[in-house]
Image 1 (cartoon, rainbow, N blue to C red):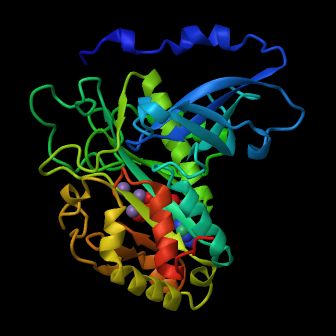
Image 2 (cartoon, rainbow, N blue to C red):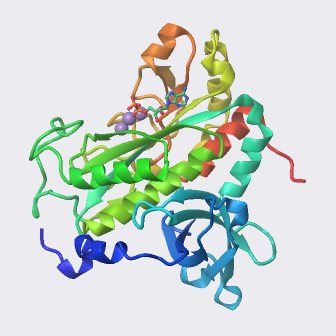
Length: 363
Ligand code: ADP
Ligand code: MN
Ligand code: MN
Ligand code: MN
């Protein structure tokens, strides 16, 4: 593949420096969500402690929001408020990854801080014990923005051999996928699996079940880890919901959901009640289920149509799928298949809680 080798980090060479002692210091990589659905990060030194840092013990920090499209140039400071801490798989323990919320200097949440609202909804409905499981589909691109391994001029053979594929010519860059999986486990991200997807160069990882706000936190860290790993292998990660037009599957962020009541005997009536509520607010959900989703939700390629709400047992062409096994048992969870791969998990999980259990009033 033709690309500039200078873009690639030489991790192996780096290893000998990574082993040097840190002399009582740790490195904290502060990570935040930017204005384009990407992640940004920067690092700082902190004194090593006996016990691991909790979010409350970590200092607030800030960044130049005018450089990320998150603030105007004449009032550019955006504050970073630590909300979750993970072991850093790149630098190793005791170094940490710090997920941070973005706040404006007038004390309001930044426009792209969707976590704040989501956390309020999760706290208000905590007694529901809401569990989420997200299936993050993505496409690996070369540095010329072409899906990895695709012929330079033209297309691979039609879809069929690639989904859960094994073997050369069927899957590419399993090394990135494997490295990412290990990084997630090291960091304590609740990754539950991976698989190759229907379109060549497309993969999926699943995170969950996670309860409440943890879902968004873990998915964002999993995305950060994927970008970082792929960076080291010289690949780009695309969360575009329809990276290649035509007869190629798009990429989604299927959202599996259950509450305590749904997971217990007789749970099906709670599942059905939730689906009825979702039906009544289809448009509101689509509005926060990712940009460019209309290119993906066509009613073809295992999707429902963007302007109609449908549900069914084991139906992958519906908006909502009740897994066969759940229907047979009479309790469990359901899958909202509408969210696009580039959607914000805080917005998805937040609006599901709002629709099913009610909005929270501003105090
Ligand atoms: P699919 O068959 O749609 O490809 P996957 O196996 O890829 O499904 O993903 C299923 C997801 O559902 C996983 O993230 C899993 O953790 C999650 N999940 C399983 N049980 C529940 C539950 N009771 N509530 C919410 N999510 C669940
Ligand atoms: Mn899946
Ligand atoms: Mn999938
Ligand atoms: Mn699915």
